[in-house]
Image (cartoon, rainbow, N blue to C red; front, side):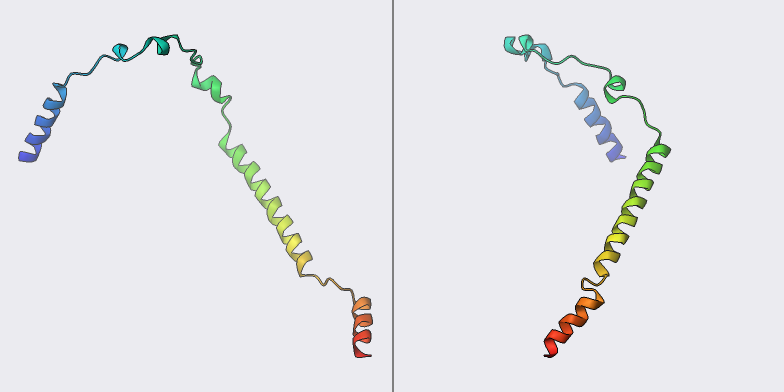
Length: 95
């Protein structure tokens, strides 16, 4: 019970505070400042995108990247020296 009573007391105490007037804190320089115009958020963000379209585009990009990485890994695992060159090198080493 005392917790509820203290919460109510704090709420009443907060309601009694005096809030300073904001117009008194604005200086002459601030009132003459060239602030940008406010625009509606809907026009600033542009048209809404379809989440399913965005998800499918992202999935296609990721699948393509995966395939490119697999191809690159396959190429990196392949032998750098072909069989003819390897035989020639081995012949040169054994002499």
